[in-house]
Length: 189
Image 1: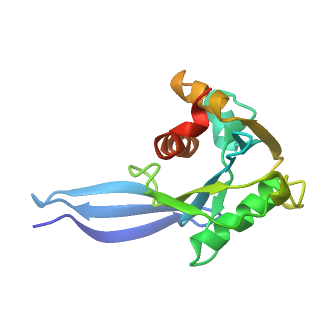
Image 2: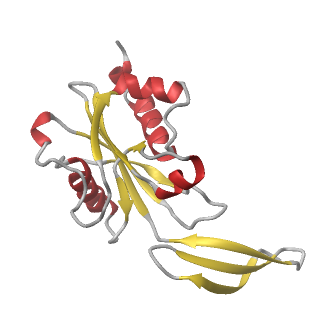
């Protein structure tokens, strides 16, 4: 007998829903598991291959303040998927957060960032840009209280942060390493 969810209760509804699932295991035992559900997401690592830089964001994240006292967090542009088109959503998030208008997005996979607790799946992309693609200031949408600071930094610095364990955001770490594998020429001195 396979695992089977026999009951799902909603404990909280909001930006994220908190669910309680009752699961029947293959040996017939019933267990209960909390599930955080806020849907799918998209994340993009925009990089300029000419100048060998990438554009990321620093922003406040309440869970990190609560868990570790961190006031801001360096990460690639990302957001909740509001439609069935991850590429369009990726372009929109990058334009809102860092002020770049992207043409081509290169798919890098779909990942479960925290499968023990969350239903979130992140559609991951790489996207080359040039100076001409800067069409706005970024910083997020007014009224969303994102408090975003746009950070353009050398790819070599991002690689060093990854190697030294200082790039703490998992999706950003995965995308920097993916870019290093696909385009090692961008990281050579």
